[in-house]
Length: 111
Image (cartoon, rainbow, N blue to C red; front, side, top):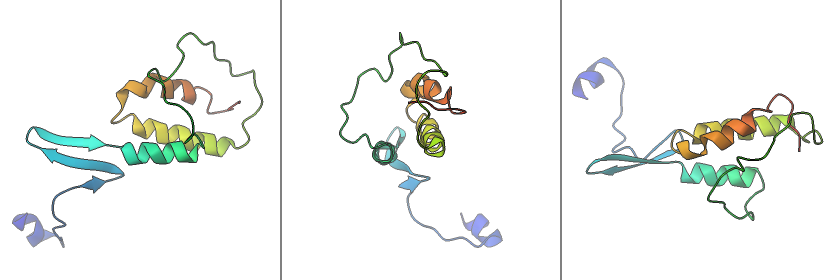
């Protein structure tokens, strides 16, 4: 740190606890990264706070179609939520398949 501070204007902010919406907790074996607060914010943005959770994030037998259904009322909001879910997969790889299914129809989302 001292060599870096001699070359660059720096300020020590103490131990890392939060970075790019990722909560960081130090343990003896390393770091624990969590996006729990970020996930809760996504749920609120999607107006799904009252929905029940599911052990399986998506029905793998469902046949999804890009041509059926009504156009989503705000495609920009859909894309924003899909992007937020993609970021969430950094710490939650178990939801990657479900997020991929959501992203399949980003060009023309339907309800």
